[in-house]
Amino acid sequence: MVVARRAPVALNAYLLLPEWKITVKVAVVEPLGIDNLKIIERPEPRPGAGEVLVRLRAASLNYRDLLMINGGYGTQQKRGDLVPLSDGAGEIVECGPGVTRWRVGDRVVGCFFAAWPGGPASEERLRATLGGSVDGVACEYRVFPQDAILPVPAHLDDVQAATLPCAALTAWVAVISQHAIGPSHSVLTQGSGGVALFAVQFARMAGAAVISTSSSTEKLERLRAIGAQHLINYNEDQNWGQTAFALAGSGVDLVVDTGGAQTLSQSFRAVRVGGAVSIIGVVTGAKLPLHVPILIAKYITLQPVIVGNRDQFAAMLTAVGHHGLTPVVDRVFPLAELRAALDHLKAGKHFGKVCIAI
Image (spheres, rainbow, N blue to C red):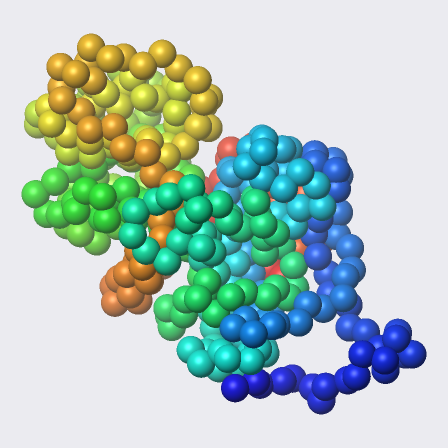
């Protein structure tokens, strides 16, 4: 079934009357480099067979977006004319031929991996990433395949929903999908970025004990407010890994490591024998010596997490709706101030997700 927002106009009519064309705002980076980020106007996209047109209402930022905009993913990303950002939410305004799962007006959120419906990761399934190898959601309208979107939990507004595709799903996969954390377990989280906060919320939702680190008393108290029970200021405690080990009794079951080079050695110290470390971020650096002896001696499972698939996303959205989980939003910028939002993210002073109102 085709649901159109306007009567169809013949192609020759557009050619004869170019003023009829509808233009929409789009953020692009051309060439790569944050200083080349600009907001332009382009013709409104049209949905084809099996596709829907989504009026995007909000987006959220991830550290990955900064890397993409500056070409940090090399050949794994578009090398120019990139529409950035992977996380967006809005409502369907038009359905193309053959769309049966959706109706105009449905509120939806896009899947980070458009071609990974379920099952294990593969090169083919990981190839299409929003705001990376394919254009992202920093735009007013975007066409999605009908299988690359999911319904928004009813209790969330558009900004809150836009925080879920990358950071929330990454935390869900680390805490729930891969390690099935429950009431008898303990989890260590690092910092106050999006993944860390969602990890706290999901771990507490599952009944686990949570130890959180941060750099300031203020942020630690806010972590306590969303469920963290034990707090460590890593600026004051250089051996915070051993402190976390002691707080958990004989080591934590899972460390959600969002730091990278400067945090992994402490993560190894914090985890129990036979425990797991999920590697997610590289905020403090991407290259580090691997402490193989402690890895072997403690029989640690070292597990990378690259967001997740559509089935995992659907399960997470169901849980978010069932438990009424509310994402933590730091600040909302208009699309016209996307550069300022990225600068705010880079400064690292945020608590929760930095978002864009479109």
